[in-house]
Amino acid sequence: MSSPQSETKLLHATASALDAQRDKLPRVHAPFRLPEPIAVGRQITELGRSITELGNEYLIRAAAPAPQEHTVLTAAFGNAVGGVAQAASALGTVAQQLAFIAHSADRRGEPGCEGEHTRAGQLVECAVETARDDLAEASQALRDAATTVSPAPAPLRQAALARSPSAATRNSSPSAMTAPTSPARPALARAR
Image (tube, rainbow, N blue to C red; front, side, top):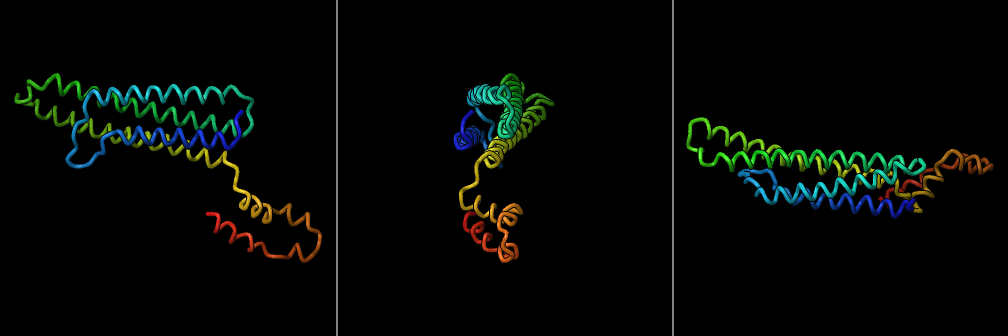
C-alpha cells in the first residue's frame, strides 16, 4: 500500500478534481439560465469516469489487508462514489427536463404548457443545486480522510507526546511529573 503522504496527495487531488467538476455546473442564482444539453451530457460522462476511478480506488483498498488507514480510505472512497453517483443522477434529471422542454417547445403557447415549462425549469434549477451539493460533500469526505490519514507534522507530534500520560511516567523525577504541559500549547497554536 502507498505511504500516508502519497495517499494524502491522492485524496486532495481527487477532491480538487471533484471541485473542478462542480465549478463547471451553473450557479443557481437569479436569473437562472438553463444549461446547454450538450454541456450536461459531457458533465454526466465526466462524472461517470470519476465514479469508475473512485470505484477502482475503493476496490484496491477493500481488497487490501485491513490496517486502520485502509478502512478509513475505503470508507472515504465509498462515500465519494455515493456522492458523485448522486450528482450524476441529479444531472440525469436535468437532462430529462431539458429534453422535455426541447420536445414541447412548439406547444409553449398552449394552455397548461407554460406551467409545465416553468415547473421543468424549477426542477432543473433544483437538480443542478443538488448536484453541486453532492459533489461538495464527496470532495469534503476525501479531504476529511486526508486529514485522518495524514501524519501530524513533527512539532505537533512532539507536542502531543509531551502531553501524553505515558510521557509523564517515563520521567520519574518529581519535578518532571508536576511540570505544567502548557509550553506545548504555543507550539500547537503556531502550527495552526
